[in-house]
Amino acid sequence: MMKKITLFILLCFTFSNVVISQNKNHQNKYEMSKQKVNKTEKEWKDILSDEEYRVLRQKGTEYPHTGKYNLHFENGVYNCNGCKTSLFKSDQKFETNCGWPSFDEAIEGTIKYVEDYSHNMIRTEIVCVKCDGHLGHVFNDGPTETGLRYCVNSVSIDFKKDPNKK
Ligand SMILES: [Zn+2]
Image (spheres, rainbow, N blue to C red):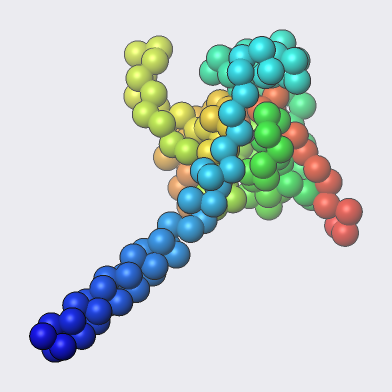
């Protein structure tokens, strides 16, 4: 009887360890989604401009070559314009003539990828993992070694300069 109990306890312990290590792997994602930003449409309208609301909340697209970060190359970080989560670093941005700010990578765990079949195309939409704000799309035609091009609307992001760099 004692043996059985010992075995049971041992099994429980092993199992809980497995669960803990699995949780650790997913902790980052879990931490991010745990702090999800949920606002009503009215609350979003109150804090966003009409154009920001149209793009971030209604999946709109800004006109190419018009966004303020299209040709912007200062050192710093680009935050989500809805919830201020840091999404991209300036060293992940590259110059392109596609008309929108483009990045070859995002800060890990900050982006949610959604299949998008609108406009008779198959694309991967990118949204902020915290507030579900629409950022743009990601394509497989990037020129750097990641091979990715995160094509982002300027109005979806907010740049904060790195005070330590010029
Ligand atoms: Zn956000």
